[in-house]
Length: 387
Picture 1 (tube, helix red, strand yellow):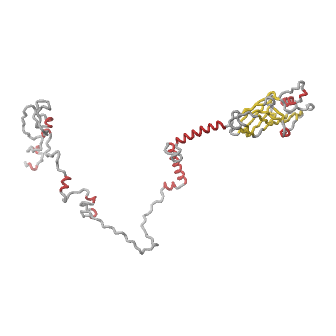
Picture 2 (cartoon, one colour; picture 1 turned 180 degrees about the vertical axis):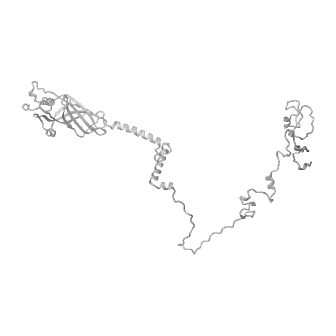
Picture 3 (tube, rainbow, N blue to C red; picture 1 turned 90 degrees about the vertical axis):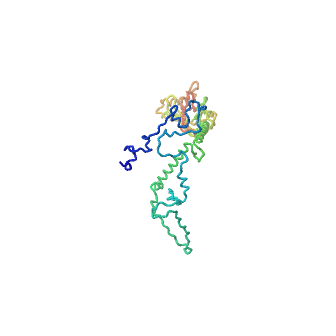
């Protein structure tokens, strides 16, 4: 058979074996003297004579290390580990020869390999220099130069149209305020630029609250306490008030009317500033029957603080009954009769309850207080003949 028309794998057809057939290659027999050769140790120094001693310092050794070719498969081509040829260095040595440059079509410095668009020149082509345009001096100032303007697209977008409306502007302002508040809440900015941050705001509010509490503690008025004069709870009216209310006691119909003053002592010791009454109204009730027998109005007055001033509240005692047997009328008639009608000269005492409704400047609501008297003397004395 003709070996030239067969496969190079000659061992498949039973032909001759080439040097590349590592499996079927016949190697010359070697005779080893001494102990067998270790491939691992021969890798470092194949020419070294086997040592009988394991002492690396005193044992025999060679000057150089070797490479065991028989430990590895022979590929057929040998290349040095170092010192091989460099294609780039070889290309630099052959200047002027037809060397392939991969950047030639892009950097305009080498030969061109692309002939697209009719470009057959292999070198860089310099573009001609542009000459400046010469202005025509004959063109007048009124002549307008026409330019080509591209076609305009949509002038405003949907979001821009939204921002131009009142709702859009309000939304943007609200977003800006929200962003500023979030930044202020995080401590990143202050109310006035970098001043008055959240920490400063909290400290300031705390100080203001403390100062306000202290000021209010001294300036808020307290409701004073009232008490009657022990010697004369009711005093006879005088001046204009005596002439403004008639004095009489009638049996048919059973009624009475007379003016008087309620002598009161006010305790303002709990107040640090003067107390101002916008109004002070009084109501008198019979202590036994709880019928209203008199009213009064002190008006608007001011009293000093930390003191015990005495005031006179004008009272108008007026009562109307169905007949003279009415218990309320009889109580007040017996207390105001003439002393000559009593053997010991002592009249019956008046028993009543005084209710005060006051409105004080500085307090949001009106207040009410009451006091009662069980042994008051009638401020008037009826004529014995009238009795």
